Amino acid sequence: MFREGGIPTGIFYLESGKVKKYKTTVNGDEQIFYLCSNGELLGYHALLSEEYYSDTAATIEDSQLTFIPKDNFLKVLSSSAVLSNWLLKALGHEFSVFINNFTNLATKSVRERLAWNLLILDEKFKNAESINLPSEIILSRTDLANMIGTAKETLVRLLKEFKSANLIETKGRSIRLLDKKRIIKEANLMGNQPGKPVKK
Image (cartoon, rainbow, N blue to C red):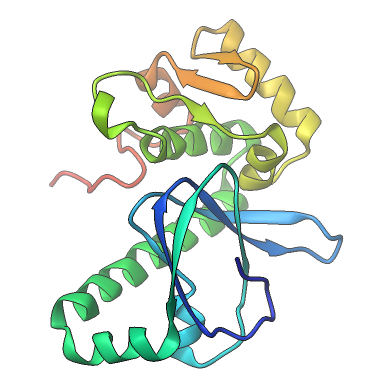
């Protein structure tokens, strides 16, 4: 799709599938900070700011994307208040996700970060046609380790602990959450799920 340092010539609309957005560390590792799902736009940050891409986007499963050329996108944007408002909300959401991820990396343990990200991924992988069934999170162990900022070996050990405690079930790359309440407790969220508004 696009790589860090590239020149934007348009944006991408994700019709189906999943796309990871990540930064490359000085050691050449990936730090995944956002996972895009159906209906999201990608690449518009750099286009709107007239800068090079500040991150890389790559699919993690079979995906269908539509490329929208720069001139077409800007023409619609200039005449559509609906699109402008939608982009503002999307920018605000991604900024909140970035701040949460940054805070979690600095303040939470690896175990807490794993629980937090499992809750987020459970929402991302929900099937709209089977909303009441548990989500099936399909993600490589390498990508999941890069999301929570730890070594793959540490991740595998923690997943085994979660499985032994009946918090999750795993099969190959698949992960299903069995006990969200206890996972929320493991994430040290004080009763608030990620991505959900705080009740006042």
